[in-house]
Length: 440
Image (cartoon, rainbow, N blue to C red; front, side, top):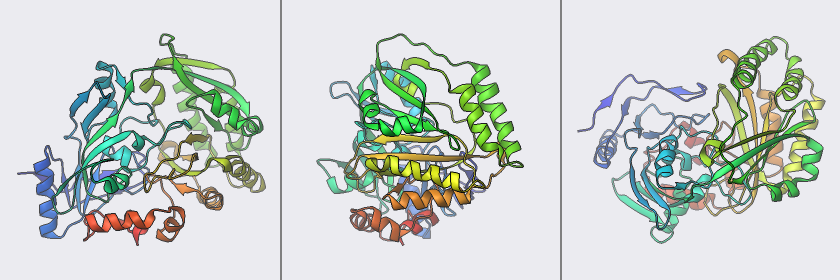
């Protein structure tokens, strides 16, 4: 019999959202998950599955039943012939990497954070960069889904294909993802090269940067022309690192947090801080080599508010220049560094922000120094307006102000997804406040 806990408070990693579910469950088996759903049907409760809790929005919040999948975290099968791995949906990617290392395998692309679950990473449309690579969900070749009425669906290209096309970015609203089968590649090392440039240079030569490096991204420092370009590419060089505690932590974290806190009283400092830190930390060329997952992931140290929209790749220059012009025209609006710009291949997953188009993701950030909120609404609104104008779609895990009307315009397959959702969950067991804005 599965045991539920009362009085558990859930908070996301950034501490921007929290909730008090009526009951909190940590099932250890499919049978126990089934029991929770049966109880929810009987008592007419809503259910929310939570993974690593990293989403910077309220997508995982509920006042009903919360299922935490952390105890369903095993590697079930490694097929070295096909280079595929089947895992329980609650496994953290951080725990999967060493297991794959043992078999000489790796995932071809990863997001910046690995304290996230296999089920959650795909559900929210997590991505990284690389115009030849899709969002992380494109690496999924099969999954099993437990629906509201207790049925288990095995989904892949060849079975329940339509549900599969929807469930790879599932928003937690189709059922409980139990297992995920991921397509891997042979283990590989990456060399990361970081060097300074200017916004004009990068935007004028975008195509050549995209051709030069497999996992190309760049960081723009608002209130300046400064850009840090990051190339990541396959290498046979031995691991090496230019990381240094003093620069990374003493300066890049503690000093930055202190100065950002002071800037909450003197907002005019933000432009100076952005330029100063570029000069201090990003002005030279740096190289790091390591196993792929050690280069892809890095430590997220700051509590923060973020927005991240995917726009058509060809709109990159127009959107960034407009964001820069907006900041120049409104000196009272301040923007923390960096604006992170990444590129992703188009796909055919119904609610993927990259559905049917190669995309540029433009991530903006406002830190919360010592947990203090910095005014950001003017910046947020101006950014969203630009993103909508160029045909953008918001990252599902990040905070945004879109409603069903917006999504119907943004997603050609939105109605198809809704039909699948309504068929799998006719009573709305898996909805919450965030999802009601999406679907109603």
